[in-house]
Length: 124
Length: 124
DNA sequence: TGAACATATGAGTAATTGTTCATATGTTAT
DNA sequence: ATAACATATGAACAATTACTCATATGTTCA
Image (tube, rainbow over all chains, first blue to last red; front, side, top):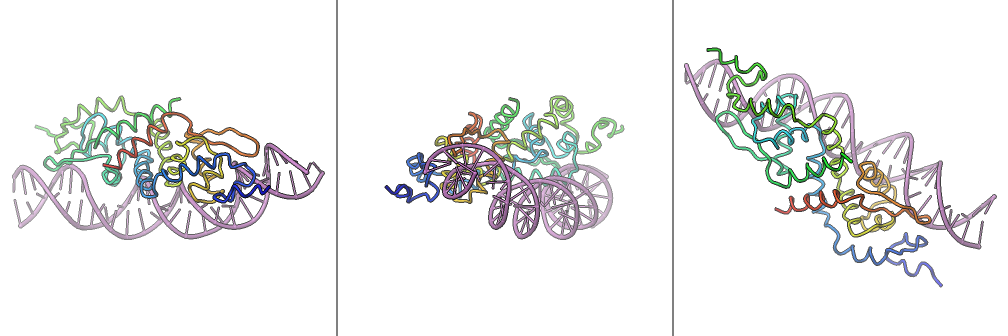
């Protein structure tokens, strides 16, 4: 009997048995789209830098202007500003103006949730 | 009166008022450590690539061998293997051997939680 | 033991990223 | 209007990263 017959859809399932062929077929339809995967990865990319993580943890304590963040995180104004831009674009922070200062804050509960889960994960 | 007197701890709070000086002082102690921030950012870095995100979403459907993932995600064996290594190092996946195949699966609930929250976040 | 298969790994390369430096924008008070 | 302050932005550079290619490791079966 032709072992390879059952492997039409997967050239690799010649001998590993292709036990999961059904699972693969079933998932192929519900797979996350390329677009969704892209946006999700971009979101996590915004969380993938130490400086940005520290900024977000600052903001968990409440809204804060740029120079406060600069003080707490200990990097230059320019660096903070660039990173805030990244966080803003990812929808992780928002801001309001008050006089000369811009007050940044966490955009929504997803952010704190992801940070908390991340922190849990590393402490195990 | 010397306006700058109240700004000993923060050279930037000369005129933005330093309204948050108390907040800053309070937070400075409870701030996430450099080490924690590093590990958290490394964790999210593992989630910051489209291919890895797609791999993880595959695995949410159940454990799967490398060639199944390769099939679903549509990249080379080598690329999948390299990315699985990254995911493994971040503690996001685990595997077991069965014969010649390695079956990978999601390491723990944190992973699905973060992916779900991430997906929620982008669809708003 | 040797061949076939499943997967991992190292080197090399093109692309991406975080920071710094210099400068621009927007706001307030004089 | 001008100066001082708070923040944003663009260019440039060093460091990191994801992929490809070639090859190595580990497993099964004859």
